[in-house]
Length: 201
Image 1 (cartoon, helix red, strand yellow):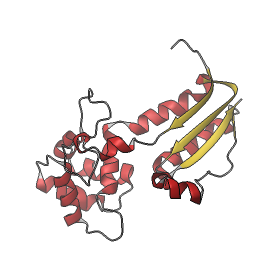
Image 2 (image 1 turned 180 degrees about the vertical axis):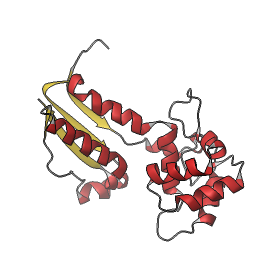
Image 3 (image 1 turned 135 degrees about the horizontal axis):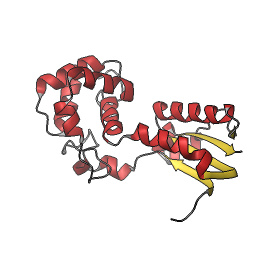
């Protein structure tokens, strides 16, 4: 847009609730739909491709690393045995059979999250953003990042710490900032939000 640097940057890494709950986009495990999960419908690789063509080991590693799912090997084995899998409903049901529910959270939640992150290369996008901050934001400018997953928050924390160690920034949030009880009451999805901020030097 013709700007070389910005005065401040706010990055909200949350996914749109409307995308997540739309069955045709393939993000939701509560409604049956095509196994898609692409934010950008123009990109080639979808969740269908990962679920049906990755090796069992690659699937297990992806689910473990991106979804932080401890039962990833069992889930990957069940997926490979049940191929081809065409819909989100099929996948959710299959995972629930492979690793039964133990609490309120659906047992497929972390696997779906891992697939979404992989399909949209969310980790790579976040790393690129963190790497660009010192050049992108003017000295004295503030950077605020909102995350909703521990994996992302860890990356932001480490990225901020690296910039501070290199003398490129000063961390403004000594501890992560979480929403107040009142906000969670009014806006339930905010319960997992974490905010970190820094000043570019």
